[in-house]
Image (cartoon, rainbow, N blue to C red; front, side, top):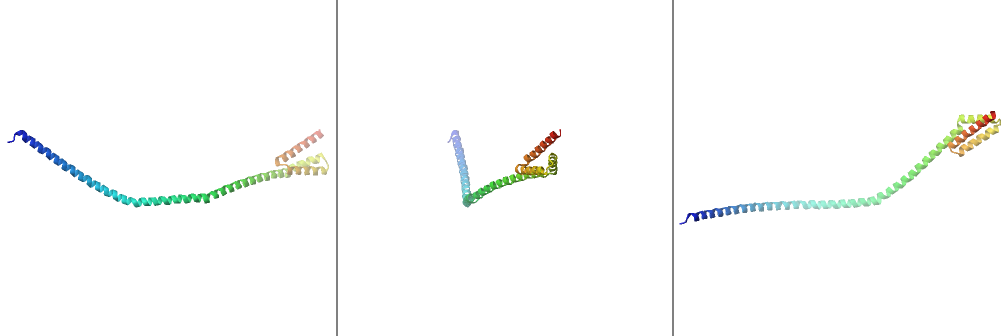
Length: 181
């Protein structure tokens, strides 16, 4: 017969064997589930790859069309817009020069207008004429002063002619004051 120690050893051996069997069955079950999950994942990856291939082809085709569009736009800019921009710059330069010329002409017209005003203002003409008549009774002297004043007004700009008329009038005033005093 079997003694108690042997029975305990056999029972422990049976429990260990049962644990190993249960553990092995559990590991096998887990491995089956992992394999099944991997197969499902593989199937999903395959279907995604199948779906991605047309999308990637379309993306490549779109990218090629964008590159072609960029190249044609670049050539259009170089061949069409660059000369237009150069022509526009040239035109703007000419317009600026013309504007400066018109501005200078307007300034010259303003100076001529000032000269004409200076010569034709009744107060200036009458005061100059009055002084000339006071200085000399000779009408030829008046005519000469008028001609001289007109020529100076035409030959000099507005300020200089005005200053000359005023300085001549001042000189004549001094002459009359000196002659009277």
